[in-house]
Length: 232
Image 1 (tube, rainbow, N blue to C red):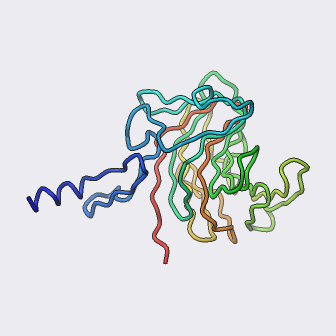
Image 2: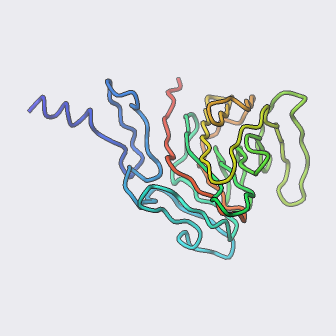
Image 3: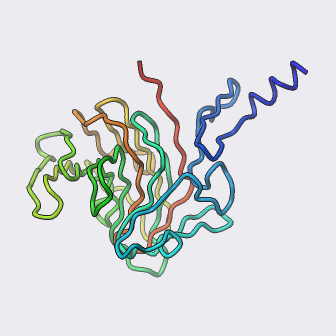
């Protein structure tokens, strides 16, 4: 009985509540599969959406049997986690569908405040040609190298802070790109396809939602997974 219980504990996987599993002899210990939710094909449990025109989630987003999340791009909006996260490693794959024009997209973290286009957050941008840029949206505070940092006041989107990527490593349409976002205290690092392309410091640390945006362009995601970081 004691042996059976130990095996059960070690094999516990991420459930629909995004509970994090820990297995001492598993190199992927602590990783939670956010999409498909709990590794369940076709499941977007644990996610909600906000879109212009009050569009329903299924109007914009669909998850196929292979675990690929398809976004039609419009109406504008985003898919967001029900839970808030502060310190974590977020990994995902994204691509522009082959045969369609690449455009705009992004991954937003530590998102707070009311739903709108676009909420207060730190964006790891996916826009074609600009993948790897950081944007502090709606007054989100961050810092970065002076030669790559700009700020502006936008009449609709409020105060924006941009930290440009240090290298362009995104792949052509039809090919998967790997994002690895490490949010550790006030420092956020972004790797694309195994290469570090940006690091923001003095970031706000308030826990918030994780968002995948729909910005008018078809885009696909897969293997969205999260590992929480222990902080004192």
